[in-house]
Length: 555
Length: 49
Image (cartoon, rainbow over all chains, first blue to last red; front, side, top):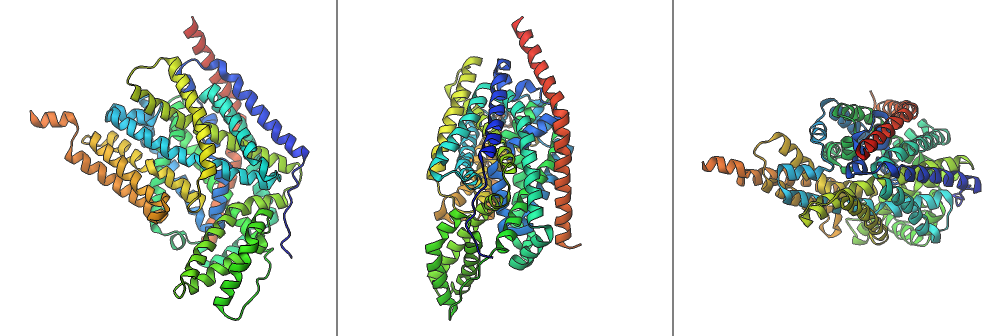
């Protein structure tokens, strides 16, 4: 079968379904404005969130188009081995839900943000330092969402590239409008509606994948193209990666601002614990379901692979493939001809890998092919959906994906804006702000953050798979945050110096991945960040103990 | 037990749980949102009076 260009069947009916879902969300989100009186109403909905709405809100915030794209990409490049991340997430949620580890203590303190705890425990300086790092890492994390999601929408809906910027700006404005106006109350209510769309879209896509490809073909494709690496996570991803994922997910589930805000918004600590147990299974689906879509896309396009021409010698074939891909790769990617691009990239990567000891050019081509495989992995799932979903269903799926995305933007806008306003700007001003001023400051920050991510999204080039970028930008502050929170809650000797060193060293290690010249691989950067953060925290606390202990020792 | 079987079992659990919990959220969520609005309304009246 030849690899023909894919044309989406997105029609006026689909556009109407998607537009109606957006209109309903915006209408509901703006209507709740009358309930917002204080900053507590705005940031944590007066701590009145119930179990089921809480679970819906948590998942809606943590699932956007980008989540489905990077998880599908991970499934595409790692096969079933990627599923291990879902099991880790489930285990972490269940343990946190059962034990209340960190979340119960933080919820009992009635704080609004995680850095607020740092001021109570270590002083204002640590709060501001943590706030700056969280705002920086969180904004970088959010900054690549629009450009990646725009590619999904362009492929699935067939919107011409020239309108993409405007489409994404429109989506951001919808999220901005109701987040800035209604805060957490808007989020909780819209998240519920969005969750219904999101869940329907997720189930439809999964059933389409299983119908188009089938489990057996997925297993055979992964076996044929990845062998044991596609099934055994220890062989494919390594123990270092798995250990880092366990640590990172503990941090994400306890102190990641958008997750922590849901904990702070629950009626009481017991509801918070139950919410995590329930959400654990949803998070398992958040990982495994889109990863399966990625594996289905892998099988779908390998089944449509075009034969690759041969040459007299491997080095001649490397040259031939490289020249051919230079001419056709971009066009193939932009028109959905992945059945032509994928086998060429795959073969070039393997042959260049064999030749690289003899030629630096082959090493460059191997790295280039790996990046291209990553890009194909990112776009394969949307191209498969464009090729297979019929009119009507396409509209429902796009409505679900838009709901997922807007809820994520809204949740993250509120999460990071609350940190910038409450933990950076307000403490630096060094005076008590009125309720009205704090609300205004947070709303202005939401607007500024929206402008920033639109710009960042256009100027930054990803150094590798989106999954790794997102995890490392999160790791920039997650490792130090969790260590400083746990140390503060459970170790009497922990001090402000230890906490400050913990943040500085933990952040530096993560930058090793984000700055390409430093060439740290993702697992090394992630684990190094944890190791340095622990070392900084313990050494700093032992060398400069808390002030009261110093006074006791002096007395 | 082979890896492929483990991943099949994990996927079945994930997909079934996703459907069941989503249904529970859809049904029970409406009541919880009404409760939240009632609580916020009470709070607003209390502060106003």
